[in-house]
Length: 267
Ligand code: GLN
Image (cartoon, rainbow, N blue to C red):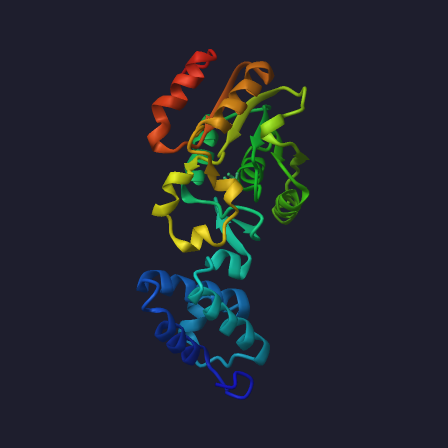
């Protein structure tokens, strides 16, 4: 089909969208994705669509929206296609240098929020998109938040997210494999890589082909590598009665807990 020459309404697009993708993606997800796409490219929300399904898509929108179908066919996550996602009710810009924030991580943030920290210094190790650091900064106005990650491409994304969400977070390049900092913190939080390469075979292409492997995977031989490094750092850098909050692989719960106890951390 010559994309440029055919007139197309949102309803026509919707039909094509479902026809092309329904063998690959389940109906509920497709429904969500359709609305994310028309919101992103046409600034039309669900209600506006229902009121005007015959809205005519212009040529530029059409090219982008056809491209979106083709990328979905190639298993690219919708969040990378439209370059954004929502986390803790806030909008986050994304690219393939950073992991797509997950709902489990919203739980981690909620857990920290529920401990009601006041005037604390908080460090997010392996900040990625900055989703943890930026959300904490947004909701904990009295706290000072720092985010670390290993290179400037990642921190560019995190900084952009701090700017768009109008918060102040200090982002610094710091590789957890060789932390070089004398700073102290009241709270350390991290969602480090914790999936063993052995588990790769259980994972879908949308993750494996597009998300940064160094943010996800850890060597089978040393699955607690990052927890070890972070706990070692915390031993000297966590203030008295400080807290560590981790996201963990459920299979490693006992091991992480033992590791923490060994270094004198409880509860
Ligand atoms: N902190 C970011 C997140 O939780 C990135 C985590 C990571 O790259 N392992 O999404």
